[in-house]
Image (cartoon, rainbow, N blue to C red; front, side):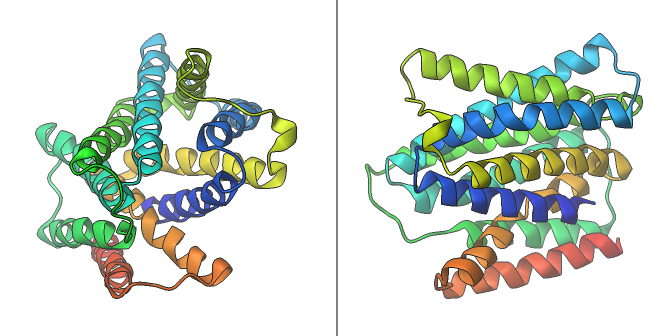
Length: 272
């Protein structure tokens, strides 16, 4: 299930990147989140579940962490430190829930740990770009903050009760949109009207992101929390492959190595 989550996140990120070439990233995130919210509501109540008030609060907290991750990621990328921001955010986003899982008593097999050990460099290499502009050191700060935000979302959403279905994702999505709209209202970001956006791409991004979140919550509950989180974090490889296939972008040798290691890591995790 974690592998499916990575595919969905990877395609969603690719569409988000395509949309961000035409309008600013904040606009993409806010409109994507807004229009995907009704879809999430329908699916959540069809799937059903018995969510407590604690589950909803946990979901809201996870959504805030995800929003912080997005803010830090986009701010870092906008300041020209993609070579540092993207791989660090992806790697920390994978490692934070692993640490939380181990502290909580999760004990994957040796074969699974081998997959985790391979997954970390795989994620870094897949996400690594050649953009080195911007002030030295700023990429580390934004990348670390983004990674902690994304990792926090994974770790927190996994604390929801198994009987709650995907209902906590409703408040998680609400928390994300509320934070981003509040930042726009404070003048941190400038939002553009939906009529000026690439509507089909943004709607596709939102639908895929919601789908990824749904498969994520089931992956985290299905077995090892740590392994589910790591498998779900390998989305950079999918985004890079799509960029190659759709936009004919050249793959750096390190990205080829990263994609290859991703496949090995997923195989080891699946076999464990």
